[in-house]
Structures are given as structure tokens and as C-alpha cells.
Image 1 (spheres, helix red, strand yellow):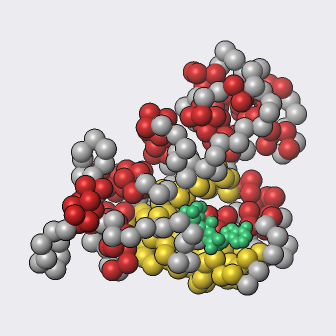
Image 2 (tube, rainbow, N blue to C red; image 1 turned 30 degrees about the horizontal axis):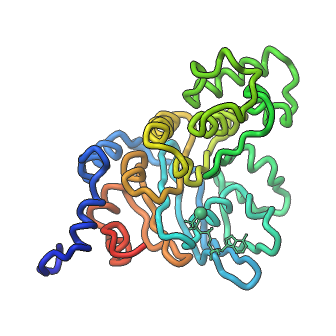
Image 3 (cartoon, helix red, strand yellow; image 1 turned 135 degrees about the vertical axis):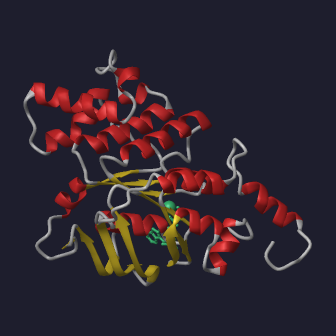
Length: 291
Ligand SMILES: Nc1ncnc2c1ncn2[C@@H]1O[C@H](COP(=O)(O)OP(=O)(O)OP(=O)(O)O)[C@@H](O)[C@H]1O
Ligand SMILES: [Mg+2]
């Protein structure tokens, strides 16, 4: 409590929710994640004054944020605040939504991804995406992972096999599926399917991976695997992850951005956001007063 009031049940709830399931305080968890953050910060992606409208509806307004290389940026905020819209604007996935209009800029390694000469397909190869609901294709496990490689023109069987294995290993799935690669991707469990989709995204070796609530449909064990994976993948890719689970944001990310009603209210070091937010709206959200 910061204002000297007697704690209300809502405050107690907020205090409880500020603990991770194993009882560790968010403060302790984030300290560890942040300490291991890369010291040299390099900007991988930069959104500047980004506004996205669906027809007349403004979904996000004037969002400016940097995505640091080889870090995990978590995006949190109540439902409908524009997290998915923002995420999709980072690899031009919004282009596929009818009636969408985008103003402002997004740069990837200093290049404007909305430039007139830019091919969105190539942007999406460099900036991959994993969705909330795993969506394996009704194809074999092997072909699910090989899919993007084939589209990219990789034909040679040996190369395909090697790249598929590497992606499955990176996604922490190889040992579970190596003896059943010809079986349908749909025969896997929910958590395995999500890791299959991560492997599919990783196979084309993206530089950035966007993850929209990748574990929200999974049980705690499958969720823990995805979280471990996110932490491990940071060496290879830059990650932006949307999550409703604040403990998850605290565990996996080095920086956190809080969205509210289409605006980016605050972004900062994950420790700072969860322990010393600058904005009242952020504090209200992370302490469970709304959302
Ligand atoms: N395809 C669409 N067409 C029209 N409006 C949309 C579309 N997608 C999102 N919106 C609107 O844009 C706003 C932001 O939605 P968005 O899905 O980005 O929020 P979100 O923060 O991801 O929410 P949630 O946490 O529920 O996933 C909402 O008002 C939503 O209704
Ligand atoms: Mg969303």
C-alpha cells in the first residue's frame, strides 16, 4: 500500500496475484531475468508513432517502442487494448485484415518495413509469428516444420531433414517426435502442437519471433516448457511476447510494455515495471485493481 489506507480485500488479492505459482515474489523472479539480460543494448525493431485503424476504429494510437536485440519484450494489458494489433503490425500481418490502415513507421535493423518497395512476405520470413491457438497444418510433423523451407525454395531432402531436425531441437520437441515424423501434426498433444508451431516458425530462421499468448490454452506443465523455451531462444532470436499472465511476463522478459486503451502507457525494465511503475494506470493493472 502506498497511500496509508487499511488494506482492502482487493489489495490482498493484488498482493496474492503478485506472486508466482511457486510462491516466489515477482520481484525476485524478475531480478534474475533482468540480471541475465545482455548488457549491450542494440535496437532490433523500432516502432515510431504507430497508429492502426480498422475502418474508423483506432485500435492503437501513436505507439513508439524499441525492441532490443536478443531480449524478450513482454506486452501486457487488458483485453482489447491493442496488444495483438501492435504485434501484428511488427511483421505486416495486419496487411491481411480488410479495412486496416497503418500510419507511422516500423524499422527492422534500421529499414522501414512499410516502405513501398518492401515485400511483406520477406518481412514475415525475418519476423516470424506464433499464435494463441496452435494451428498445425493437417500434414505430417515433418511437413509442418518443412513448410516454410519449401516455400523458401529449399528442395534438397538432406538439407530439409537437417533444418527440420534443428528447428524441432530448438523448439524442445525433437526427442518426443523423432520416431514419429511421418505422423500427423494433429496427433500431438496441445503443448506439443504449440511447440510444433514454434518449430515451424523457427525453421526459416527468423531474426524476431512474435508470440501472441502462446501458452494461454495450455496446462501448467506445457506452459512451463514454453516459458523455458522462450528463455533459451533469446540467444538466437529477439522475442516479443503478448501475455495475460503477469508472472509469465516477469519470468521470461527483460523489458515489459503496458498497453491500455490503444496506447502504450509505459515500457521499461521488467523489474521496474513490476516493482516501481511510473504510471498510475500501470500500477493499478499490475496490482489487480482493474483488467
Ligand atoms: N480484425 C479486426 N477488425 C476490426 N476491429 C478489430 C479487429 N481486430 C481487433 N479489432 C479491434 O481493435 C482493438 C484492439 O484489439 P486487439 O485484438 O489488438 O486487442 P488485444 O489487446 O490483443 O486483446 P485480447 O487481450 O483480448 O487479445 C479492439 O477494439 C478490437 O475490437
Ligand atoms: Mg490479443
